[in-house]
Image (cartoon, rainbow, N blue to C red; front, side, top):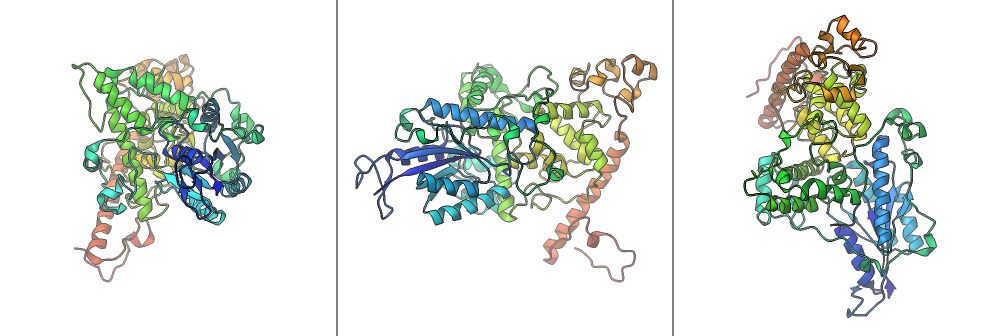
Length: 586
């Protein structure tokens, strides 16, 4: 008979509350033993008796994972704050977090051998993110060779995504291709699963839960959390030219960076209390489209998305906090409903994750790229100068540039700001691929999320899920009515701070005297517009109309002729000068 030694591997679920994988690990460490034949018994009263085991909570700082690869200093720092907070919470319970650095596929097997690990638990990665899939498969193979049992527990969404009890795919016949691809049909699916009820969150473990597998004194000065982003090693297999100079000391000491939030479960739960629990009327009546994207002092939303992204906050905990607050709201308060309510935001999150899961089941690794089955192919252009101007907030359109400045400085923008800059980059003005925009957001946002980020870019570029391409955000007039004085622009584009309100959204319309008085020199300290919105937006609508027609033609050809559709933009899809025989498509 051997004692159970469990490693719980924290990945994106950086929390103690509502963490089924961690609770599974604690149960094994406290009660579980294994006989020589592998039969597990209960410590007290189970067949064969046994002794308590040990648990090693582990986090691996892996520079190649989605959360760190290509990320900004803001997000690297936020992640390290989350890890440090998790370590503090575990220490309060008599345990600790063992933080290793490098490739999990190399590190974990070495630790299994060193600690005599018998079980590995972790949260399941259900979206099919390519690096996570490759990593987890390698870990499973290594664990099998080492005799380590692996237990993966879904905990990233309100309900499991896959073909498991209570999962979304399980309720559409077990086939990922059958999942709904619209929000309304997704809500209908959810309503059929346990009548739409969301399981309650699990309590966080306490000190008693850790008493059997507390800290290992042999490692008190080893595997400690990192203090600074520059301590994170450079990603394996990438040059600096490929992903940019992110983790150097100069960038990390940039005093202009002021992220909108500090990381960690402790702050996440406190923010949930302040923004949701303590404001029942606001929570009950919340409507996302009615919030302001030009608030200068603080966000007009909950700003909980960074904590949901790294799993510092459980979506089920957030769901039930919203439900409880709504019950306490005054009777006269109008109750908002999904998809615009706070519950609706959590449903959008699950729907986005389900779309990523489905896309990657159908075509592995396709989510986040134009090859995914939910994407309409559009022949985007590629202009590095336009992309660089957009990234740097130097487009000459103050509203767009202000949003991009806030993104760089705080790692966050209100969703309407995200809508504006995404439309501007893609179908609205610059006609650049949504993929390059998604890649940039992936690096800059504190709340960067593999599923949500790509879904939103598909939607906003009208490449998938939303197809009203004739609805275009104006980079000049969109926010004038909400912020006529341009306070948001004055905050984030200080070069324009002294311009009269009449010209703050379009400084090129001011005469030289007004510009000089405000200290604005167009083409010098602030750029002229890089495109003429009035002209290019109309041209781009025509391009989208043609792209949609060609997409529909290919779909018809595929359906009626049983052949694979030709990708848009390929040589085969271009009209030929001389055609001897025309194939009729019916």
